[in-house]
Amino acid sequence: MFSGSRGGVLARPGSRLVNTVIFVSFVVVGLALLVTKITFKSHHGVQVMPPFGVRCSFSTDTQLRSPHGTRSFLQLMEERGSSNAYDQGGSALHANTSSTQVKLEIIVLTMSRAAALQRLLESLVRADYLGDSADLRVLVDRAPDTGGVDEETVESVTDFHWPHGQKRMVVQGVNQGLERQWIHAWPNPLGSGSASGSSPKYVIILEDDLEVSPLFWEFVKGADLAYGSDPRVAGYTLQRATLRANQTLTKCPILVDSKQNPAFMYRLVGSWGFAPKAAVWRDFLEYYWQHIQNATYDPSVKNLVPSSWYKRQRGKGTMWTMWFIRFCHERDLFVVYGNFVADVQGKDRHRKRTPVTLAANWRESGVHYNSLFAQGRDFDLLSMDARSQIRFPLRPVFLDWDGEPMNDLTLL
Image 1: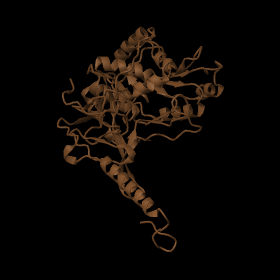
Image 2: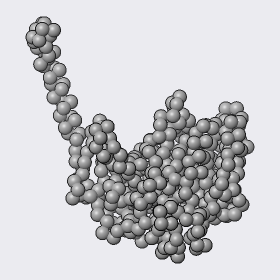
Image 3: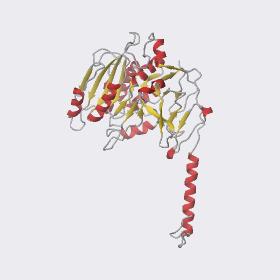
Image 4: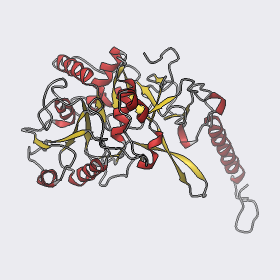
């Protein structure tokens, strides 16, 4: 009921009809919101958020249980012959045995975002490399219109001190574009080509608008120790999974129960910090170069959201992920995701668990974001004091394209 200035009912001609229409409208909207607030009865512990920002929930008795338990990074290291991975305070020791020391190369893709690049490099310096050698290679692309090089970006890399290994900067001869920057980043996965010249066991590729957790390397190395022998694993991502690639069931973002599933497998590649397995990346490059020559070949996969993105961007050379998605789809491959939370105090002073990530995207203006200023990072970073969350289920859940777990898959 709407009232006038004196508290009486509006009585102008037609007001009753107007009030009726408004009342009916409120009822319709209320019913729509009520219908939207759905509890998805998934017995796999996947919590999702429906449209209109209304949070849906799942019952505790429907959460995925992990009867086989999880393993920490330390336990995985001990299985490989190293019992001194941490000191008594929980900090990583730089005394790994030769059987567990590996060579890592970090590849950073950039063009003209010097401030964003500096933020990423500083976060990489703060990371814990567990005593492993970590080379840094920065690929600087040229401007697509002028072919020029951003001098501020070049200067930032030149002046930056890298204490964890060798540093090398490569300025592209011509503009590559984002897709070719990725494709050319690791051209010899099983050969040489790192900053120090020798072949790295691991490569992590990062775009310059990211910021990494100090624990990102512990996750990648641990994930490979836990799941690297499974032929269905394509690689490891630092990105937090939110997008359901196939939204036929629902458009709600993915939210997997972190207590039961601190790591899981998902068909969709996360490009915000990606560490492909060397043999898989080699096969992918062969696939890419074989099909890119065919102008009629379409790497899209039916009913996937990224396919619609690709169709809008086709010909711009900005979406290497579509090719990798199709490659993984044809070979039934999965990517390992971390799944972490932080216990924070909300505005109401109640403690709540909020998602955190291994690599935050600042959503800088560029190929995929069109804003004058960075929008801020998508998630806060997993902090060093949350190291105990890095665990790996003995039987991880596998998510299909729709974000729903697949019952018939177990770890080989």
